[in-house]
Every structure is written in structure tokens, then in C-alpha cells.
Length: 131
Image (cartoon, rainbow, N blue to C red; front, side, top):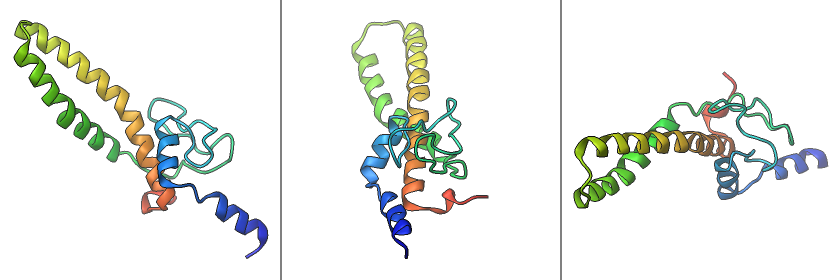
């Protein structure tokens, strides 16, 4: 192995927690500088800062799954407690919570996708191979 190849391999050894944190913030899991998404849920082909390839990573089904788990299992019990102790009419409560859960889902979904992109990238899982 040449020295340049060794440096390239060592540069890719980003700790999982750091890669996940960078991705959740919308940055490249490899360098933390370039953007991970070019649109709401469309990842970039390559990082603009380090050139790392993300175009072949497919994390499409995992992000909605994690979003449903978070919203459904964490925020719905909270909603049920608040509804039980409040005096808001049922129709107003339904409108309010539909809006809250929609906004929460829209906020969590790209972060969940970024997290799975970072995991697939860091582990080199099959979802990170070119199709």
C-alpha cells in the first residue's frame, strides 16, 4: 500500500458518532464541510468540499420508518396527556395536532435520511454500492 493510499484510507475513518452528528446537521459525514442535500430529500452526488460520493447511497425507505417511530411513539403519548388535561374542544385539538405532527414529520424526515446515509456510508453497507 502506498503512502497516498494509506492516507486516503485513514481519512475515511471518521467515528460513527461524528459522521452521524455531521449528517443530522445536513453536512457531509466525511468532512463536515459540504452540504449533504441539494433539495429537501435529494442528496448530493458528491461532497463539494471533499468529493466523497453519496449519489449511490439508497436510504429511501429507512427515513420514513424512523420518522414514524419517533413521531408515533414519542410525541403521540405526549399529545394524549396534553389532550387529557386540557379543555380545548375536540375539533380544535384535532386541527392543532394534525398541524404539529405534520410539521414534526417534515422536520424529522430529512434528518432521519441523513442519519441513515451516514450509517450506510460509514459502514460501507450494501445500500452504499452503485446500482
